[in-house]
Length: 166
Ligand SMILES: [Cu+2]
Image (cartoon, rainbow, N blue to C red; front, side, top):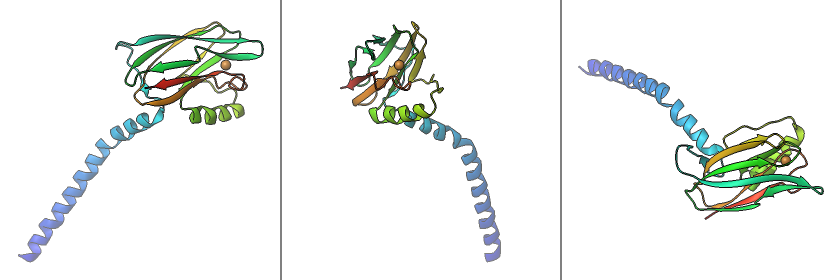
């Protein structure tokens, strides 16, 4: 009797273990990748182009040894979705990379070593001279963020702007 129970328990454990393994195989990739995407962007999350958004026009310019964005300061309400319409009014390529200040600085250092690096992520656009582009972004976190051009030398010439999420 005791022996019999032992076998049944052993089978029960085996079944439970294999069921857990199957469940693990099926369930793991989804939360893992979702979590990865969630942690990827410091300034919020990629927007939904089908949902309403406030339009903000941003121009990129060069001149007199300077480069920059106009406006260089944008205020946003938390939860607000913004459609950034980007216009490169310069004669060089420029980028718009939306992140935290710390992240942009770190990223700029990497780009100094790899100047050929190009961005076309949900939080970044690279524009050709006189080119246009768009980013739809949802600001889900309060705080101070930054948009910047990380092409070597551009950040130093003033190519960054502030985003305040209230
Ligand atoms: Cu630039």
